[in-house]
Each structure stands twice: as C-alpha cells, then as structure tokens.
Image (cartoon, rainbow, N blue to C red):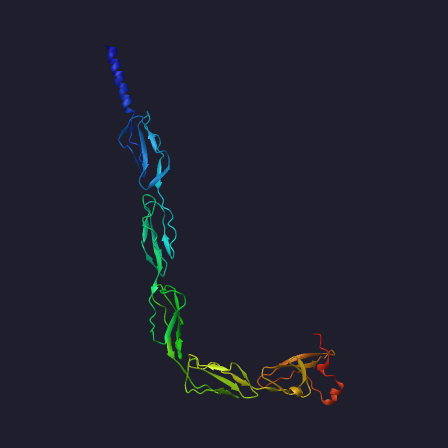
Length: 346
C-alpha cells in the first residue's frame, strides 16, 4: 500500500514539474508582430516574427522555438522602415527631402518666376513607392505690353515664341522724329509684370550754329527734329577737324560740330625738310595743312652728322626746332647743309 501511494506522489510531482516548463509571452520587437501571440507556449512550439507593413527585416532570425528550459532564446530580430527611391530632380524647382523612409513626406517648390502645376508633396507608401509623381514648374506668363497698335512706340521680341514668359526680353523703338526716353528693353518679371516701359517724346533742336571759316550745307529746314542731320564744310585753304556731320540729339542739342583749322606757313626760307618721306626745299613746299608733320635736319654739336626733329602744324602755328640754324647765303657756301650730312647713329 505504501508503495502505491509513493508512486502516485512521484507521478504527481513529475507532472507538476513538467507542467511548469512552458515559455511565457515572447519579447516584443519594435515594428513587428508574432504569428501566434498568447500567454504561454509549450516546449517545441514555434513562433515567427513578421515586420509590420512598410517595414523590412534588418537582422536576426524570424523563427524561434520554445525550449525545454522554458526560456526563450535571445531575440535579435529587428525591423527598419522601407525606403522609397530617390525622386529625381525637378526642373526649375526644388525637392525638399528629410529622408526617404516609409511615411516620410517630400515637398515640392518652384524657383522664382515659375509656377507649380501638380502636387505640392508626396509620401512614401507601404510598398516603397511615392504616392504622387513629380509636378512641373512652368514659367510665369506676362501679358503683351500695353503698347497701342497705332502708337509711336513699338516693340519686337528678342527670342522666338508666341507667349511672353519669365525673363523674356522685348526691345522697343520709336517712330521718327520721336526720341526714346528710358530703357530700350523691358523684361518679363517673376510677378507677371514688365519692367518699366520707355516713352517716346517729340524733340526739336535750334537752328545749327555756323562755324568760323566754314559753312553749313543745305540747312534748309526751319525746324530740326531728333536724328535730323546737317553737314559742314570749310572755306579754302582751311581743313576740317572733326566729323563733318552734326546730329540733333534727344537732349534737344546738336552733337559736336567740327572746326576749320588754318594751314601753316613755314617761317624759314632756305631749309631742306623731310615731308611725306621725301626731302624737299621749303621754297617749293611753302605751307602744310593742319595736323601735318615735317622733319627739320639739325647738325650735331659733337659729331659731323645730323638728326631729324619732327614738328606738327597746329591751326596755323608751326614751331621751329631750337636746334635748327638757318645760314645766310655766304655762310652756306662754307658750311654743309645738315640735310646732306650722314645721319647720326644715336
């Protein structure tokens, strides 16, 4: 009888001991779930971790078995967010990206002068794709400039195209005799307006003033308007210095008028000079025109040679070099003309 009772107690103790060897609820893994989630697991029972939608395994085994010890092995399974691909580039705009993870949002904006057409943002979805495709940035459109079709101000587009868009430039012109005041170009701005347009105004110039020793050709008008021209001439033997034509400017004044310059008489009688590359007696040359140059020959003080000094005619004034010495006819019989001497080496 005692042996029967002892055996029953031993079986009961063994059953209790075996009943205690169960695994508790397994540890939670962030961003993941378990296929069978309960309070206790018997020895040999399997569990499988699975990442939540939008997340993907990073490391560790997904499958674990409840051991006879009743203690789950260390769970190293981890999940990380899925990533969406790089969205690309937005022409004439910018994509603002914090990261590319699941649920992250990217925002779109356009550069100054461009307008966004399409979504302003896109979110990374559970399957790793973006919720919206890229928008487009279109240039701001400006209306045609407020210029009357039959006015004196007209324009033409510098670049080809039917519409006026941001940074397009137009060039203006005024019908003569009107003069333009302001910039001759206007540009389409980011707000859809034009930079300031010029104005066309009527301009008159007074009767052109005469010039000394000269005349005005065919100045027959009573009034002179912008861009009208007159031409000048000089009385002989004067020659003109400056442009022969003068133009009525938008300021209501004439452009620079020319002057008539006098020729120069050569104030020596017996010199031989170099003129236009040739030696010539001043008796034959007599005078030269304004701005022309002749070279006088001077004798060296230390050597039996000569050197040349250039002098230029300036409105009737021709200076004679200090080194030049004119001899009378008697001295010239004994002294050699410097023009006929060998040139000095220095």
